[in-house]
Image 1: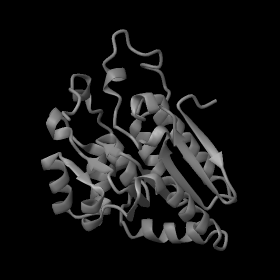
Image 2: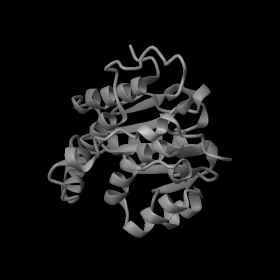
Image 3: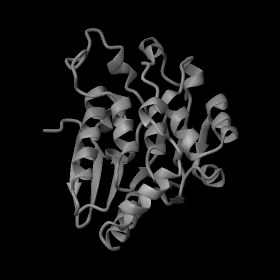
Image 4: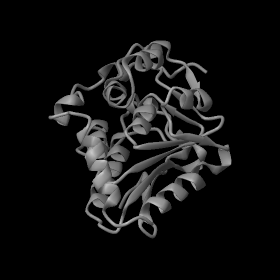
Length: 241
């Protein structure tokens, strides 16, 4: 049974909910493994036409859980084959269904790449996205891969080299989110979009996503997403407020 997330099935669409609100829905390997498994399960369900990805407690995702990563003694899942961030991203890349990110409050670092892995992003009006690894002295392997797919090198450089908080209106101006709504309407709007997609003829969304992904021109996605671990995170500090 999933421990850090849940899967809710609705009529024609589904929600993947990250359930670590006490840690601002930050990522740990078993959570990444659960998201991967949920995606792979939904891929096989012909009754599902769209997926909403959101966090519990009004947060999307604050990135890698550095407290857990650097804990002494380490968490019980350390060193076990419970999942990893890259395999989660590969599952999202190969996801047959459109995925809608509910960007509530923030998407930081690895949380930003998780948002960019989705097909649509609906943000709250005061929400922000931050690729702040430059402040920590570490790289941005997953963000770099998704930004190459989703935007221009200029926009990627603006996010990565400044490392600042970019709020919803600016994200929309830059073409990095689909829309923004009032903070308390994000999940409702995502659910509305998912239900609308589910109301269309079965298989249409999958066919359209297949066409969109084909236009990326990536022959070997496994080579496109780096396999090297970001070991510098083992000593990285939390981002400054």
